[in-house]
Image 1: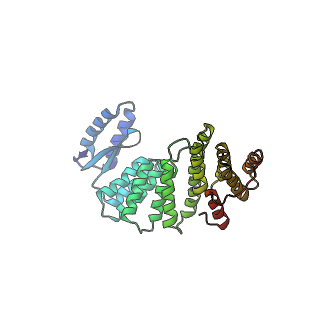
Image 2: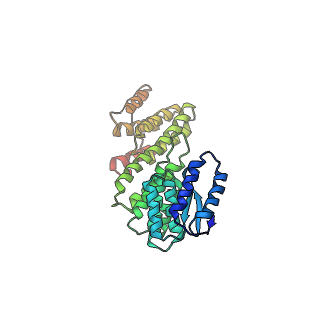
Image 3: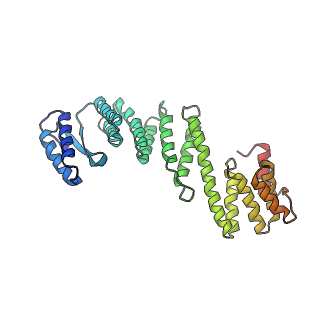
Length: 308
């Protein structure tokens, strides 16, 4: 909404809005907007417009202010803890003065504050826009970091859809691969490992579900995924043991023996190996490698260090 009227100071207009917020806290949003508009028609500085901030507060933005002043006003909103309003302030700098040096600063700063405010989608969009415009800039690693952590912070438990987890994995890998020497790489690598572990946990959760219901082929496929794709995670020993269980259940003993052999070679002291060994010896079997098994190829890769 644009309002061009008798020019007086923006602080005076803000004071009018503040008076209205305190005088009528229980009035609905629509009526508050009408009254605020009436106030600003009388008192607002030339060519300003209205928006809504936190808790439906009316916000006055003076479109005639220079970019440095608008930028500093947005920074003041950050200092005051009004993060959502600050984000809109940085967006205004970019929108009103797209060719200024402050627009570049406002994009990445707006993305950062949006992330701090928990508006992850807006943070991702802002950071991606920054990378589109300035892919080689010194702050490009930070922009990629904001994308990655915005996805990472939305990872849900293994019982839910893992789309965000996969997005986090992709963006974290991109950060590590594109900016290996950045200040954010070490943290990204830690988060990357945790994200991979989380995805493995999802496969395990589904695999256990199938195993309990006697759907052994489905279970084997899930546990095999963990062994082949996520072998550096904490879930690998259990996945190998569950393969022993599933293969024995369908009578494929040589695969069960191979899975136990791989488990015993890599995790000889684990409880999972003890359980697998007990299952085999209970059937007069023992861990042994079948050279024709997919598990055998995996085992050779582990020995030669070629797994990754």
